[in-house]
Image (cartoon, rainbow, N blue to C red):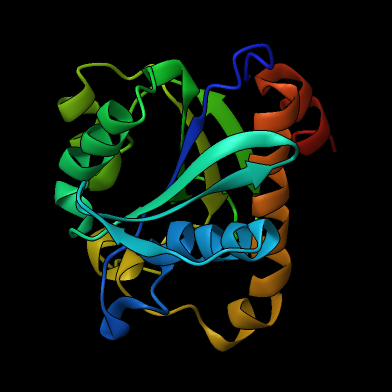
Length: 195
């Protein structure tokens, strides 16, 4: 994914909502994965003028700018585009980590482009970028039970059963981001879509 001759950065964005009240929400899986990646990179996030919390470093031997927008999910496009412009990162070197209702809980999938499936964070990023052609690492949270509104479901905390598996899922999702940055989309898909 990265041209090693120029060592241009990849922008990795973890989506979530700010504040302690939202910290354990299903919608915040992107933040949890970003925190795991920050641990792997051996650094800490710092507030940045783009409206994000930022960590620059190396991941899988490649230069990465890791960000968490400080805005709420439905307005995350502005800070993401601000960070992309700051680092001169084109959409094809943008990776967005987010929750996905249409995948079973804990499933990790990677793709380039496509629709937003009602995800307000993706909708905001697509609108701000003017394109859907950026990479996504999707973490399945499953469908809401019964007739629960999906908007309510994503803003609820993970269940006790889900929390028991959450660390494993976050770790696997972080592995997928690292593989995407290191090997590119097709090779990473071959690893994480198997089985």
